[in-house]
Length: 334
Image (cartoon, rainbow, N blue to C red; front, side):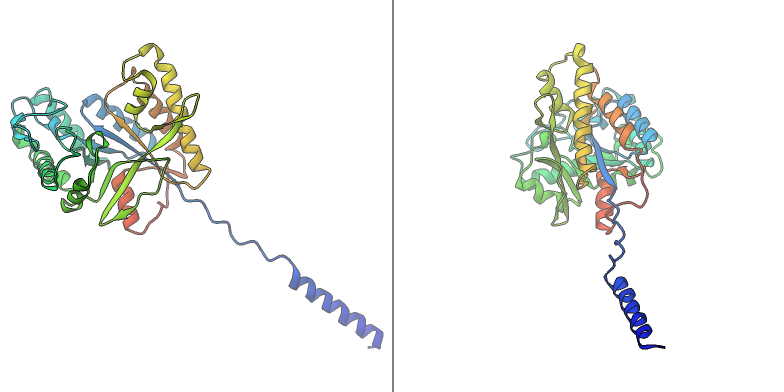
């Protein structure tokens, strides 16, 4: 080959090699965002109709809820003396008791159905007393009352037959929420001693990751912006009720309260969904405040978000089990 031809060929080869060497490397595969978790819970869990309504919502949306049960609703007027709160005489409760033996039987049936459908039955203590001044021993007594009454509810109330596996439900309770969200050092000493794995009594400035310490995972209801001024409010129906109407019924404004609540939930969800995807916690009661405004908002919200493939509406118990098992997110959604 003539010298000039060899030089041109060598130069072309160098340029070709250089072009390959300096080309942009292929982009690394994009990391998929984790699924957005939403944790919806209910306190006290009294009205049978609301058990039914919440379970129907779960079936429509694929959600699983946590029910923080107050055990006095498993005692009839005739069996109320089975419960004695710390520092109180037998048969005392801040929230009353079940209306009748039949009322207890219907509620027990709903609890059993909810548990069989994968929902989380957790503790809201028994008589809804403010235990901020209770000792560790007082809390352990309250926890023992809850477990005993739940486990023996059928026999205590002479309701037969007791369903097979009923007592397993009581033994599977792993979570707690304090009445009035009132906590103390003694409570947090008693919870792990009683075998609880999570507490959901905290309040935080916006959604936060739940820390685990000493075997106890501690969740917090977030404060979320709400209303025309976007003022923070705890993401729980009762707090919205006080915000909207001072804790008094205003049924004529129920539609407005529903819309405000839905928008607050949706904005809080969208912020996490489009951002860091920290789990969003929302709390409710079985009481229909302001003509059901807050449940109506919940049903609209859950019907939109829980059905998404990249969203999961799961219970506190299942979230804790997943985290402790090393699985940060589920592999399937909806």
